[in-house]
Length: 143
Image (cartoon, rainbow, N blue to C red; front, side):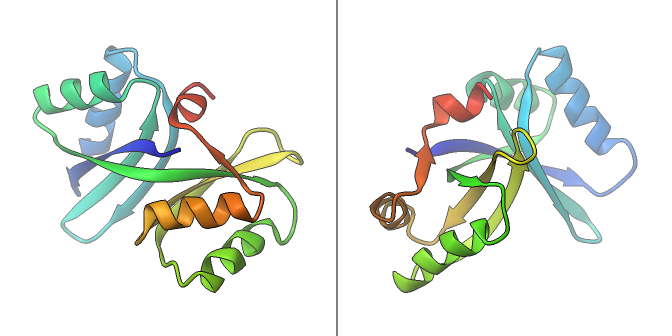
């Protein structure tokens, strides 16, 4: 029930982000979800893509520093309180959210939230026990 995410470390200057996305486009890699965080010197682009192995290889070949991380994708109804219900379940189990980002498949239906936890396996177990739908990587890569 884990999803593989790639992280690309980017120098914080014009054109670097465009170069990374061009590399993925040229390799016919589709970005399913993303998050970009920055500091004054560098940024971290976190991506869920349709072909993790190929994306990692083409980015490395293009000179980018690339890492892989296991994250968890949780489907939640797209309505007020949806995120809170997940966080409440995690808090009760003393599980910390290190970071997260989200996207909506179709407005008014379901949102998919990508989480990085301090205790991934325990988080998956706690979420499933509370009835939340944890998505397998194959499902997320093909959205």
